[in-house]
Image (cartoon, rainbow over all chains, first blue to last red; front, top):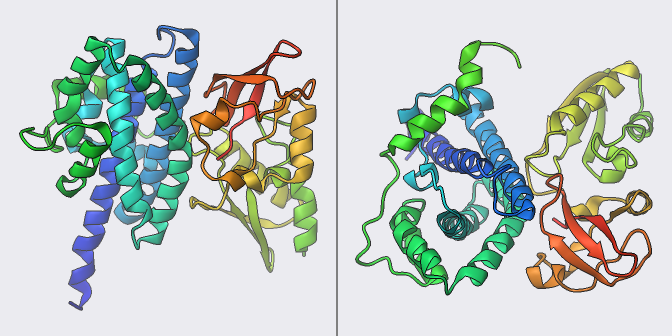
Length: 224
Length: 161
């Protein structure tokens, strides 16, 4: 195909992909940060705070790439859209109040994110491939943290139940063709599982959004 | 008109905002300097993407160029070109003297938990390798916490990325 019209859908698709990943990282970063001050041990307090900071940093870098195409800026993309316009997977929105579910999500998310980052690093979009490689350098440490906890809790029924319960949500982070690899990594099955897909939102997102954007909405247009 | 060498010399005076013993040049985040008339282009690579000091560093670079009489144009390069291997030998020594164990080289590939739990990491205070991992994460994204069994002292280890 040639002609001016053919590049537009491709650019729109790229911006939507960037927003999907950025929204996942922002919202999960926000959820992880909710353990700051109340994690079960001081070490985990530090770990969750640092992981949250990294994820939000990844979101910022991805929003900046998307902003070039959308003629916007990272803060506007992060905070000025209505909750329904976010493209995050329902998985990252869930407000998880116990440690077993929190660790199960960190573990499943990091494994899914690894599959996604591997694909991006190999893509012919050099800008996105470069950023994905940079993000992955930091994610290595998140994976270590998740794997360490998963190994420790593997035989605990509460953890097993949490992983099984969250599995349909975790599948929804990835494109359908990427899911078999995730299933293989974590030893679960794609068949007979109804993935909870990106596109619909949980009621928890609107609550989180209210809190997350409250300061920015208090003085619209202010330069912080 | 400023020269490339003058700009590099001036940038060497800018301390890292969080670890001021090391300069931005020693940290390896300045990828290139180019002069075009009064315009001074600097390519700057972030260390960790979530580092809150990024904006401060960028502004410090702009202010320094302006002090030299140049017109700054700082581009933030968000690719994979920065790694802790870009910290200079002088920078690593300054980190160690200040009590931050410098990052292990990436030569061996991606860091693994097994490596972090091994005794390859040296205490910046007493030089012992009898150290153990306390926490992969620390007070900033770039640091882990270790414990020295020899001098019984916790210390901060710069993460390898």
